Length: 202
Ligand SMILES: CCCCC/C=C/C(=O)SCCNC(=O)CCNC(=O)[C@H](O)C(C)(C)COP(=O)(O)OP(=O)(O)OC[C@H]1O[C@@H](n2cnc3c(N)ncnc32)[C@H](O)[C@@H]1OP(=O)(O)O
Image (cartoon, rainbow, N blue to C red; front, top):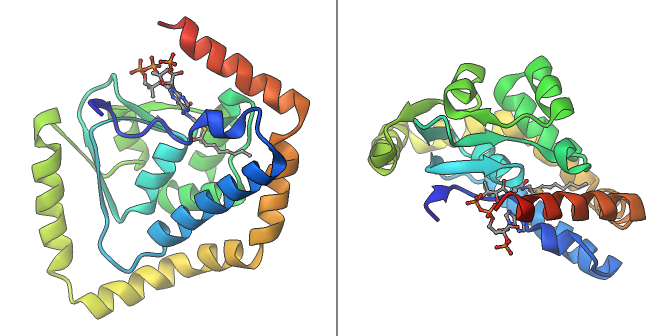
């Protein structure tokens, strides 16, 4: 979609549904993260628009992030702005990218960073004009693929395995935690208010 890299997780999947639905949804989100963050392939994010929350997480899972140089496009883990909390593995992914203090600021405030600021923070690696995002991503891919595969893969795994193992060990507990959090009346109300606000902006 033009102007949007990803709107993040589908909020309607987290509103007004059964606990079984929430559990299956969260298992699928975990699966996406385990596959993408743990992939031994080279992954380059070509960020052609805004990228809140789950969208930011997807970009952070990649090896390298190229974003369109447009201050109207913003990226970040904005969960607290919705009255929800990014789970520990979202947090770990961000810490592994921009460090502990920047992550704490970012998560507590639910900050969305316009592209130039995201570059300063190291949340993205490179800004290019909007019409050059795909070609810049292809060029970056060629560079990454020129590194001997076995050495690059082992290095990637060395950097990411502790975070991945942490979720693998606690998958069921993390699902239970999500279900009991998201099904609370107060959290459902927060999500509803956020969705109403999104619609009012039009
Ligand atoms: C313990 C819990 C942890 C859970 C972790 C959660 C992770 C997440 O990813 S939560 C989702 C976070 N996402 C957002 O906050 C994005 C909110 N959306 C926006 O900021 C904007 O919509 C936009 C920048 C993505 C696009 O802006 P624009 O082009 O102006 O389009 P509209 O705002 O008019 O939106 C069109 C349409 O889409 C609906 N919508 C937008 N985002 C979502 C979403 N994430 N889930 C579901 N629906 C979404 C929006 O309400 C509009 O709907 P209609 O009014 O029915 O057309």
